[in-house]
Image (cartoon, rainbow over all chains, first blue to last red):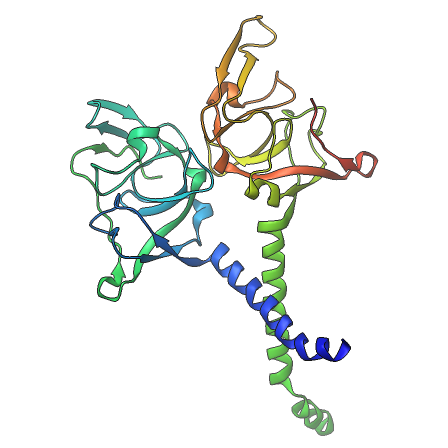
Length: 166
Length: 169
């Protein structure tokens, strides 16, 4: 028994160390995650398994800018994480085309929408999302190979009245 | 002097630096893992949780596992990111999980008016124990469960109050 343990020890040690380093990297700096669903259609497509690089450092400053793609915990189900485009920051006025109303985004919240408006289940259904739920910024597409590249910022034309820099 | 220098040059600086660096990285990762995924220490401040938690000077343990796994139940004290200001973390008691009906006093101290709400899906209802000095779900409504980042399980300081902070119901 002691001999087996002596033989296994370096492997166990290294795998524990590797797990710790990996978890810390993914908690604090960046991680790669799969994106499913067709709500972000031109940016991410549903058919293939697509992977995105999610940047997690610098989240505590909450210096988001409009047009970024972010991941956040769903406000309706805490087990699922969603990927959407952040469109409005606290204090902005936003017009919602479906209901033809103009809303003010409350303090500490943001407005998120999918790129593919017709099938996306987003702030138009559950309203503004608390900024504390945001888990990371999607900066790059890393898979499939022909789409590797930065995810650019984009804003819908003439729907948001930015009030101040957050 | 030259002998000392020769001995200094003989030390295996490179191996010592490499060993120290790798150990340092591992310790940092271990601490970060414990802090983010297992349990962390916090010093809550403010009057909203009197008498369970004092205004100042307490040191409590926030258990991250049960928050992550969804074991938080009604009656627990939780810490969560404030929905009104994401830079702040606040500590309140859970009074209702999704689907529960919660009755609360709208303006305690001035009137007896009460209101009943049903907590929507994926949300929890949080309220301070000291209802006269607490900004909680009565003002900003139910809070998404995803904002909860720890369940307060025990108090370390002051030593006189050492022990579990359990559910009160």
